[in-house]
Amino acid sequence: MSVIDTASRVLREEAAAVLGLQKKLDDSFEMAVNMIASARGRVILTGMGKSGHIARKVAATMASTGTPAFFMHPAEAIHGDLGMVTSEDVVIAYSNSGETAEVINILPSIRRIGANLIAMVGKTSSTLAENADVVLDCGVEKEADSLGLAPTSSTTAALAMGDALAVCLMERHNFTADNFAIFHPGGSLGKRLLLTVEMVMHKGSDNPVVPMDSTVKEALFIMTDKGLGAVNVVDKEGNLVGLLTDGDVRRGLEQGTSFLDCAVEKVMTAHPMVIEPNKLAAQGLHVMEKHAPHPITVLPVVKDGRAVGMLHITDLLKQGVV
View 1: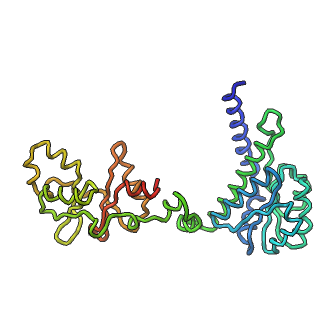
View 2 (view 1 turned 180 degrees about the horizontal axis):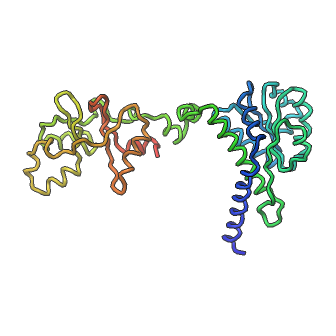
View 3 (view 1 turned 90 degrees about the horizontal axis):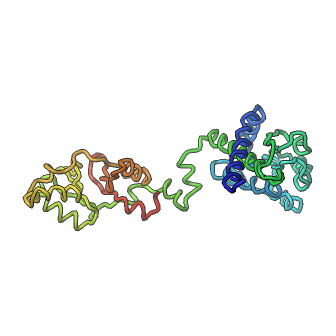
């Protein structure tokens, strides 16, 4: 079997394992969601080996989507880390076999502390499942490796079940994009969620503005000085009435130099696409790109009809808004 054939088989089998979980969703899953949503404490996820890696990832997903959660290593737990657990917490224990010694060893202490216990297992008749308040069946028919031994399909299924739990909790908490931004202030994701048009736009003396009775030549001087390749055209009250771009000027000059003496209001693009300063910068990029295959590169920024700035696509890209 070729490398591509093997890879395709693995992907098919892992996808089938995840889809198979749909049939396992029952009242227990809803009980788990309700238990966590009503808990006064946090969610503490634990697991050993590959299951531990899955538990750690699900804890991170929950924490970033409005459900306070963290990972507790079961081997460290029996040496003092169980002090992290309170009676108001919910513990989610991952173990495909349900017999992982390090996890089983902490069950008596979890029970004495009084925390609720959710078991994420591949075998519902296991020791872990029998000692849990709620059991979520993540079992799969077989692993995806050629020997059927390496945790592959089972870990993928366990991860998917954890993600399903996290998303249901996210919706239960009415978690919004603004909430998400608070927990993700760094990197490109944070910039997409936090950066507004007003933070990036050219405003004040950098805002290229010309009166509507200006000539194209006068507008071209402003366009060149500000270096944005366009000017906002406004009426006497400063309200935006149009946009003139360097592309408009180039096309107009094909008619002759007399074009430079034309009034801007006669050659501008009336009623151009605009954006408000309080909108997300990422939304501005979306407006520009949706005109593909000929996306626009500038957007007039208006507030109450007035031209208060201009947004240029290069400024968005420099800020990492993608």
